[in-house]
Structure formats: C-alpha cells, structure tokens
Image 1 (cartoon, one colour):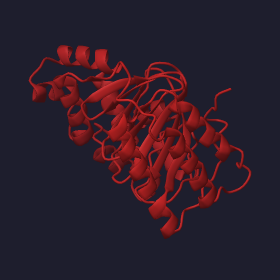
Image 2 (cartoon, one colour):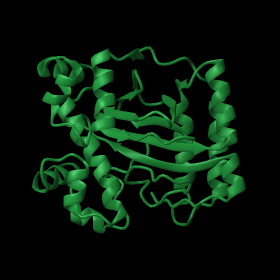
Image 3 (cartoon, helix red, strand yellow):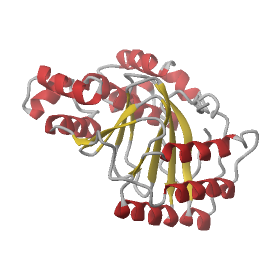
Image 4 (cartoon, helix red, strand yellow):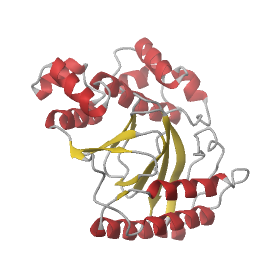
Length: 294
C-alpha cells in the first residue's frame, strides 16, 4: 500500500554537519497530499535537486517552459533553480525528496547526459527511501541514516533515466508568460484582467488556454501563489495580518483572511501561532541547509 501524508507526519530529520552536507544532504523528505484541482507552487531554491514521484494519483508538473504528466511509479528530477508548479489531476499523494551536495550533482548530471531526468519506475525507489525514514519515525533520523537512504536512491536512479514522458511538451507562449508573470509579480497584479492586458490577449482567451494546459484557472493559480508566500511571511512570526495581506497583493485583510482560511483551513492568526504546521497545509522549504520537521 502506498504511503500517505498522514503516515509520514511525525518523522524528524537531523541537520547534517558541514562535511556530510557537502557530499550528500537531504534538505527535505515528505509526502504531500494531492487534491484534484488544487495547486502547489514551490519557489526556486538554488543548489538543490527535487525528486518528485506520485505515490498514488496523478498530476501535471510545470517548470520553466515545460509541462508534463506524472503517474504512479514514475519520478522526475528537477533542478531547484526553476520554480515548480504541481497541478494534481487526481486525489493522491506525492513523494518529494530534496537533495544537495556533490554526490547528487554528479549522479544527476550524468543521468541527464546519458538519458534524462525522467525515470519510468523511479517512484519505487522514492517510496523505498521514504519507507526507510518512516520506519524510524519514533525517534530522530540521523543525518547519516538520511544520507544512506539518499545514496541508495541515487544508485537506483543512476543511468536509468529517459528524456521524458511521452506527454512532455512546451507550454503555449501565453500560458508560459502568464505563469512567469504571476510568479514574479503576484504582489502587484490587479487581477486577471490586468494580467491579460499585459499579455495583450483577452481575459477569456487567457483563461481558456491556461485552464486547458494546467487544469486550473489563472485566478486560482494567482491566489494560491499569494497564499503560499503568505505562509512564508506568517511563519516568521514578526508581521501583522495587514502587512502580509498587503505584501502578497490582496485587496484587503478581510478578503485575505477569507481566502487563506478556504485554502489552509485556519485563519492567518491561528496559522501564525502554530509552531509545527500540519502536513496537509502548504509547506514550503526554508531557505537554509537544515533538515526539516515533517
């Protein structure tokens, strides 16, 4: 039976030492719930590799100007320098492992030259690594144990990649431009009408193309990017709800609170008071080299 986000909630990973982190560090290892029609936007994080594998359910992945489907048993490795959008087409769960270090660089650079960073059966290796960590859920997982599991994953994937799944394709220009504009200017966009104006297309045409390629409307994607960034600010614990609302581009704090609660399940103040956010809330990696409480 495939892992679920609920099963993987209590694993704690220990931060690596400097030497170990330079060779092979596990920045993140978690199971994310997938809800059909929802969106998860992962910001760029330089110097890491993201290994993504649906454990059950399917999704579309968009990065840069490419979009492709991923199904159970498949895995894709993506460089952290690109922002990543996860667009589930079915309810399910995604295994996400973030690696850094010289070993990961060498293996994935070699895989890219020899075949590619899509692995038709790579999801099995991802699930094995997650199960190894889950088996130690009642105590802290040491950096050595995490790195041993990561090394086994690298060896399972090494040299077995292909150029990409059959469904991989370039996004239409208008959709690619809309994704990039939303990611960069989410705080300043005055709605989808302004976005369509910037791209010199009608709002109806933009919405139709965006929905066809991603499975969600541009308005929903814009709100989710804003919510993901609001979560980052709220976790810092030093900003007012009004400040976060303004900084993320919402019209007013009341509207922000309503949209936030619909997306996250808590109001912004309650979310900010949490010390450990539940696994089914938007969970973005911090910008450091530590390992995370999952």
